[in-house]
Length: 363
Image (cartoon, rainbow, N blue to C red; front, side, top):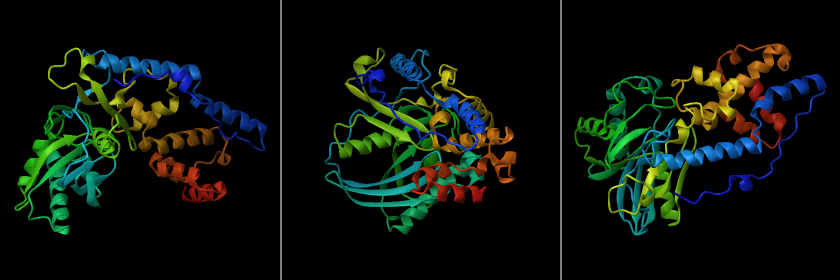
């Protein structure tokens, strides 16, 4: 695995704008409420050491690590001389896209992207309905871009934990994020997609690869820089993959000297190992989630949960009469109404007062 750094020396000092209120008593109490989110250097180093240890243990595949360290069956990055036309379905925790990419000697000469909204009833419905939706969106895309008469290879980016047995075969372990579809866990998602595609006359598409979004990020990164070694996703959820030397994998069988491994680090602390940073707000978010007691680390850092985290803090402060004169609005009674993008808006606006007023009016 990549050489591990000394995390203690890598931690850089940072500053946070101090909270200042006209009421010193309320200021003190609010700071006490928020103190649970302060990470000391010792806590960070402890977590990093534990994380590194579990990465190494994961290479033994003996059940002592929560990380899947999934073999992606990809053994090198792109060489930079690839040519051809390729389709992709990209299913993430929130977004779903259909993509056409044309390469000439490693350069992208054409890229078409269409976003499709997956209705909520499909995200928690049946597998047959969901995969039929994928096939129909693919047919719509190929017709829209004038390529419905071409036979094209397709890569399927499927951003959920799987057991992968070949480049074009992956069995879903469990859903995550906003998805909880019946009839798919334990099934080969490539087979399900192929079956859905076969129902549409004239749709001549061959699924040649299934990858995690982290894998896709690393492969794309290798096209930009051949030295790229890690693919990282910080979005609705979070995960990473990297190139590992097979000599570090005791049970590896094969001729390849390196392999790309999908860590699936969202499950870090599902067993409570990282509870030193867990707060009562994290517990609340977990209990209200679609997948309680799973993907604990992802709930700490995933964008899907930022809004709910701030919502939980706001409600606590309101109930203690520390903000908003102790009055909880009807809108704030529902955790879904405080959106994660509000946090980005607050950070992005030059004039903080303007962004806060917009958000407060929404609430």
